[in-house]
Length: 402
Image (cartoon, rainbow, N blue to C red; front, side, top):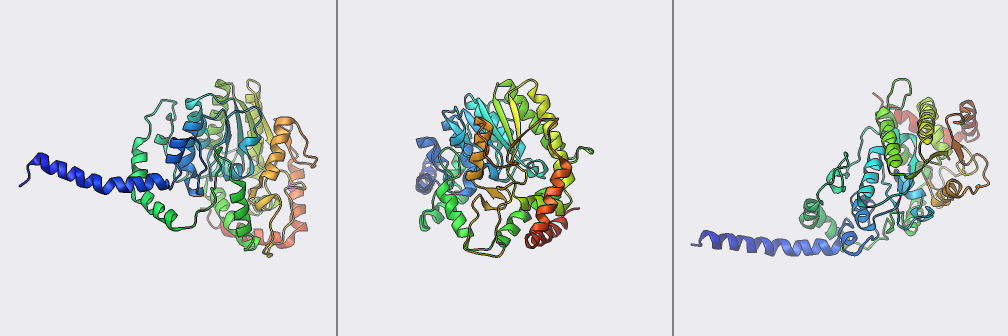
């Protein structure tokens, strides 16, 4: 019979014999693109589903001095490489990113080094999401907590990534499947080759199918979340987060540029059928007023690229396959060909030459609400087939409202 010390040693040896090969397998495969960031510096992120986990680790090594913050539109449409005067620009935007996550990623970057420039990309859904964070977000993963207090390095998560079932399952899948193009470049931007591959794959389906998928998700955010209402204060939580971001940038002397994303006309039509144009306009007015107040004491500008113009009204055939839009992956996500124009206008004062594309907003120049409503109505009337399809999507989304 084994003595207790020998029994424990034997048990430990068996445990190590079983776990070390598994850990080595997961470390080498790195299914979430985390270990490669820590081992060799900022590396491409292989899968879309890994970005929320991998980007904070990449930022620990990269120590960015400039950031892009926002949701998937910012991740797809803007490029950190286009931020001027930066040595280590990083696109920290994540799919379905809420302003709370944007603030936390900004705090994370500041705890790791010095940040002097931020591009914050916004749209109405950013303010109406029913949750502060999306699945996959982890507070302990960040260098500081929400109160800016330093946190321990998340070693426990790394152990889970080395030995966990999910990591092992994904490692096996990666080993047995053909290696795909990396979804995210080392600086956090979407890999253009990967995006092009997605666009080609999507072109095998008609745009009506793709719009239904995207708009169903957007409808969930708009109709089940705290729809922005300047009179009742709904959506005030997100506006409070925006004010916290303004305060952090002011305290750290960060140059902040806030952009309203270039929404395709179909999304404006969607808001019209959902009855949410008043909420959209109220949100824009409140955003302009809040930013104008902050601009009295800090370096912040608000730009609106969401108006209808030659770029945001790009035509497409609803039921045609084998074709791709020029400026958009699909009507919900604009490409960097549009994002680059916007960034050049914001940072270099370089006009795009496109009427109604890009306007710097102040509290006094927030825009012509009646003109906006007429422009959307006119576009809808000129595109009856698309308008009918959007109306059906909006009716389906409206059934989610309590």
